[in-house]
Each structure stands twice: as C-alpha cells, then as structure tokens.
Length: 201
Image (cartoon, rainbow, N blue to C red; front, side, top):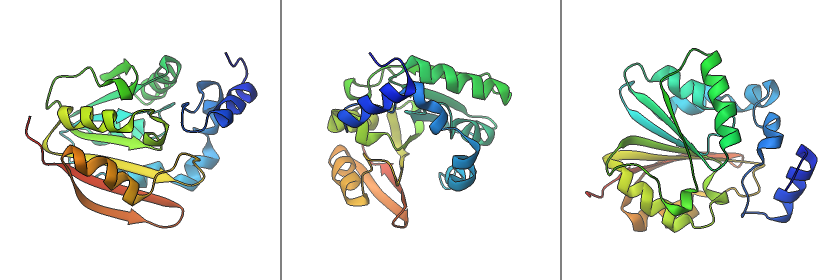
C-alpha cells in the first residue's frame, strides 16, 4: 500500500492503465499552474450546460472541474463518483470552500456499474478517467443505462495522461452501447468528445 506521493506515483507507473491517479499525489492535479494551463472553466463551458441538468462527474479527483460545473448548475444538481473516497473528500472540501453544499458523493468502481436508477442523469462527464477503468465496456454499458435518452456523455482527454484515449477509441467504446457521436474538438494536446444517448431503457 503506497504511503507517500512518490510511492503512489511509482505504483501508478508500474500498473499503467490498471490504477487510478493516486490520491496521495492529488496536488499535481489541482494546483495554480495546471489551472492556468488547462483552463477548467473553458473546458466546462464546452459541456454546454443550461443550468438545470443533473450531472454525473466520474472520477473527479480532487475537484479540478467540479467547482466550475457546480457554478453552472443554477437549478440542477452535481453528483461525483470516484473509486477513491479520499479523492471525494478532497473534492468535497473544494466545493464547500466555494459555497456548494448540495452535491452527491458516491464511492465505487465504475467497471462494476453505477448505483443509480435508470435515466437519472442529463450529462455524464469523464475527464482523463476512462483509460483507467479496468472494464471500459461495462462502464459504458452502465452509463447508457443511467444517462437519460437524449442526454449527453462527454469526455475530456489530454496530454500528458499516459492512459489518454483518442477520439476513435472513444467512439469504439461508446457507440456499441447506444451513444451517438455528436462532435469532437481539440488538437494534438487534448480532445473534447461529446455523445448523445440514443438508447431508451
């Protein structure tokens, strides 16, 4: 069991694709330099929220995007789902400091299915997460169940994530589960990919 952030990162390197980014090293994910370079507000703007959606953020880590999503949900609700309870606790602190208290937190493995009723969410957002899920097809199958018909599934993938998936790989995962490709924007450094759920449960 890793005890320091150095041990945790070395463990992640040894198990590429099989382990999430360790909570012990969360400061690498949520710091002013990364915030200035990645511009999370701009990424969240691209989700095109209207303010009334119920949004599921899968693998929020320490809440790098979570506060920006919550800011846009005037009448909606944000739920966070992460494998690591420690990451959820860090995200909760970020949200509370920003004044957002009505947020759902659920710990679990995305590959084992999401413990939410059918057709719960208008949007599911995954940023640099799907590459770390051991059974990606099972994860997408569960997302197709809990995202409403006509709802959106949104991926943000970026360099230098070692588990980064490209647009075609994301399409190969999402489309067999009933998600229809909407659009993709980006460059060699990042991809932002949107799908619409065409499946009726």
